[in-house]
Each structure stands twice: as structure tokens, then as C-alpha cells.
Length: 115
Length: 115
Image 1 (cartoon, rainbow over the protein chains, first blue to last red):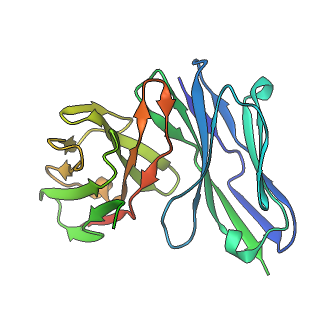
Image 2 (cartoon, one colour):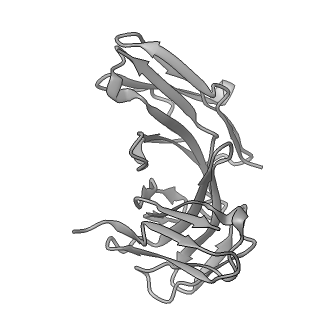
């Protein structure tokens, strides 16, 4: 069965530090999608990135970067030079393409960036 | 404006009452979802729908009923509310076709309190 693990429940860093949020997934499917979402204190869920299982290229978007490694079933998220506005709960999610778009979310990592 | 909207945003009800949470999207996305978010459990899927008149259970469907007579609407009904259903409910939609899975677009959430 599909499963997403985010072992870090809470992380605190000081502004300008780099921080990596871990995501490990389990799936029986060969075609699947991985996602990251941000939930700031205001409560909305903001889409950050989607990656399919056939694309292992790492991606960088400004201060955000993602490292996808199928060999270790991981899809880690790094924030470079963190800012207070990055404080949020971050969710990693998995969807197996052959199983009815059943998105499964990890428990989330609460990131606090201190000034 | 285009998007996905939920109503009501806040609701207080009593045990045993029926409650319906509304969800409306303007993108004509085929898939729609209902999640609940509780501390310690992250986001859990209640029901999802692949198209009008097609619905399926998620991880925690007990006590909930859904319908989807029109593509754009996906109401969630609690037929007899219980205190354990106090939660924040998120509706989402995605554009998915075949093995292609688009990202989830979330509504702002509906905070339900059952007394």
C-alpha cells in the first residue's frame, strides 16, 4: 500500500540557515506522482511542486530545491537561506496513477524560522 | 473568480444534527476530493469522485455521505454529526486523465465544530 513518511515532526532554524525536509515514500506502482504542499499559519494549502516517477531530475525554484531519488524512495525538499515567511507546515504527498487518484499525504513537518 | 470555494467556512453544530459542507469548482476538473485535517493525523481522504455520479471511499468514509450530480459541485454530508467529526475539512480538485495526475487545488477549508 502507498505510504508517505515525514520523520521530522518539527524543525526550528534561524533565518538564513538552509534546511532540508525529508520525505520517504512507499509504493507498489511504477507510475506515480510526488508532491509538496505548504500550509502557512493562515491555513490554506499551497501547491509547490509535482514530480512524476519517470523524471528524476532535481529541480530548483528560487530558494527551493527538490531532490528525487528513486533508489532510496525519497523526495527531499531544501530551502536555502530560509526566511521567516517560510514558517509553515510542509506536506509531502504521493499519488499512484493506477489507483484512482488516491492521494496520500505524509503527516507534515512544521518548520519554524526564527528571526 | 475562478477557483474552488467551500461553504460555510465556519460551522458549529450539535451532536446528531445533519450538516452539509459545500464545494464548488469552476475549472471543470474531473476529480474532486474531500479531506479532513486533524492534529496528529495530517490530511486524510474521506471520499473522492472521478466524475459526475462516480464516487469512491477514501481512508475515513464512515459517517459521511457524498454526491456529485454536477461536475462542479461535490457536497459532503454528515448525516448525524458526532464530536469526533470536529475537524477542518478541505475540498480539492485535480485535472487527471488516464495515468496523468495533476496537482490538487484546495479550497480554503471549512472548520466544523460539533458540540
